[in-house]
Each structure stands twice: as structure tokens, then as C-alpha cells.
Length: 434
Ligand SMILES: C[S@@+](CC[C@H](N)C(=O)[O-])C[C@H]1O[C@@H](n2cnc3c(N)ncnc32)[C@H](O)[C@@H]1O
Image 1 (cartoon, rainbow, N blue to C red):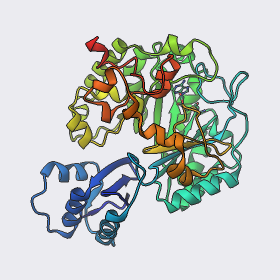
Image 2: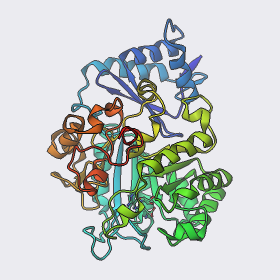
Image 3: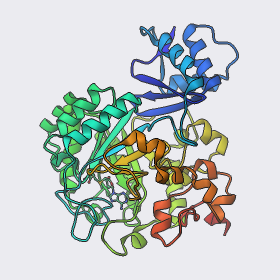
């Protein structure tokens, strides 16, 4: 008899439910019909639901064979609660992920960095007070936030990081971490695993010392950190910043990730740095570069990219601002696969080490602080403006059939001199129509 996987959590949303697979960090948003289908599947009474939906739940390990105590009751409770749930327009009832900046300090200077405190940057070299973290976790646990992404700055510099990881996990939230790897020894990897860390992302921008050095000075340490994670049994992924310099290494970085046992290779789009003058203009891939990336991705994971069922050992994931790389699939297929596009203030928010609430880590607009995430979720006019982005959008994006699933990246648009709501200048789909 099928049951929810022991690693699946579920929470009610207006008109349905959100599922989260804690091992793969995948989410699925079900409408009421989908929630009904899940309920009757677990009850063993499934009738005429589309087979692809059931296959999807199994393939993505939301559902597994074998009874898990209370699984049907959990789904039944969510089914009862869903009709009365509320959420801000075009947002979830609560963030799915909270990005929490643990510190503004960093032990290295990377070209183009969008966050760390450096001379000329507005970010202060302060650590987040533990009490701020506790306040955020308390609210997050109550609102059933699924994940916290700990970053900064270099989070491993925070003296109470392990306590933060433990507290999040004890509160039912999966803590993840992004690091440069310098302090990630095998001992630290074991300690993080034992504290309950879900996955660590290690930043690596090239397959060779030379390419990586264009943005990051610590190639050997990053590789050693990955080896350390493997030895410690801590799940890890690679964060690969897709710069023009790094792009030729994309395939090799992916192969390196496969070889080292990375769970994911996550592609990041360059956003405005806090310093480094013309870095973004020099390093941002153009629409033609992105078309090349799309071809590379198709070659690397053809079946997976086409929406297929086979889960590769090392998955390629993309940051939400790169949704335009997926437009070789139909809008319907992307919608079914749970693609949201720019998810700032809809699926996630950022809390800085000073407690300010931002729609995303790349747009430092804030009208609420004190780490008061859930009040901001409901009351912030900045977050509300982000959720109405498609209403403000102009130009090629406005006419695009992927508008509701993509929305480009306002941080990049504004860094290139556009206004919030202008079309994305680097889209490989709309630029082709010019
Ligand atoms: C700011 S770093 C902080 C965490 C940690 N110190 C590290 O180096 O990974 C978080 C992630 O942002 C990426 N990043 C840095 N500058 C960026 C930029 N201008 N645009 C997009 N991502 C950037 C890094 O490669 C890293 O994976």
C-alpha cells in the first residue's frame, strides 16, 4: 500500500497543499483535486486520476510503498484545513524557504561577490545574533516553513553555527548551507551532519584552478571540502556561477561533480555585486550565451530536462532567475513540474544578519526588520510589489507566453539601468524575436 515517504512533509495551502521531500529538497504544489488524488491513493481507493500525476509522486519520492503510521491521517488533516487557508496574492501561505544571512564577514574576497562586507560595500561585517535566529526559527516553525538556507558572508565563521543548525532541525526545518569550503574539514562535515544539516553547497566556478581563480581564490580548498563531505557522508552540491569566463567549464564542472558524488550542480546567474564596478557587464552571459547553455544542458541531462522520470545521481538545478533556460518545454509542462520563475516574496524571503526582511538577497529593499518574517510576509509593501511584478512588466516579457512562469530577474534588469518591471535583457527566448 502506498504511503507518504517518511521524508515527505505536507502543509495546507489555499486551494491545496505543498509537499516537501526532505531528502531531495523538492517541492510539489497540489491543487484540491491533486490533494484528493493523494488522499485516495493512500487510502487504496484511487479512481480516475491521470497516471502521470501518480507516477510523478512516486518518481520524486513523495510517496513510497509500505505503510507509514499516520500518513493518511496527516493528509486528511491537511485536506480539511486547505479550504480555509489564506495567503497573500500570488504567494504561498508562508515561505517555503527562508534565506538567512548568518554573517556579513568572509575570509576571502571573490570577484563580483553580491554580499560580503568589503571596503565600498554597504554590507556590515556583523554576525547575526543567536537571538535573532531563534526568533526567525520560532516563527518559521509555527508557519511550517520547510527550509532555511544559511549563507552570508561565510557562515562557517559564525561561532554558533552548529547550534543554529541543531535548532532549525529540532524545530522541523531542514537547514542547508552555502560555503566557500575553506573551513569545511572532515570533522566539521561530521559535526554538521550530526547537527542535522540537510545539504551543503560548496561554491566552485571552474573545473581548473585557472578558471576558478577569475572569481574565487580557493580551488584546492573547495575540492578538499567536497572530499571531506564525501568522507563524512554529508550530502553536498556545487554552486556554479555562470559567468562568461566560467561558461566554457560548465560541462567539466558537472562531470567533476558527478565524479566527486555531488547531489546537485546548481547554476547561478550573475547578479549585481556590492563592489567591482563593471564586473556584471563584463561577466553576464548574453542571450546567445544562454542559448549555448541551454544546448549544453540538453546534452548533459536530455531525458531529465525533457521532464522525464529518470532521476540522475547528480542533478542540475538552476536558480529561479534562470527560468528562461527552460523555455524549450511548453508552459503547461513547466507548470506541471512546479516551475515558478522569480520566487522572491512568493516562495522565499531573505533575512539579513541585522534582521531586515528583503524580497530576495539581490534586492536590498526593505520596509520591515527585527527578523519579523511572518508580519512582513503579510504586511510588507515591498514584498507585495514583488508579487505584482507581472502586472508592472513591459516590453517583450509582457507579451511572452512564459510570463507567469518566469518574470525574468528584476535585480539584473535594474542593474542594467532598467526600471523594476522592464523586460529581462538577456532572455534567450525573447531576444531571439528581436
Ligand atoms: C555570497 S556567497 C556566500 C556563501 C559563501 N561565503 C560562499 O562563498 O559560497 C553565496 C553564493 O553566491 C554566489 N555569488 C557570489 N557573487 C554572486 C553574484 N554577483 N551573483 C550571483 N551569485 C553570486 C557564490 O558563488 C556563492 O555560491
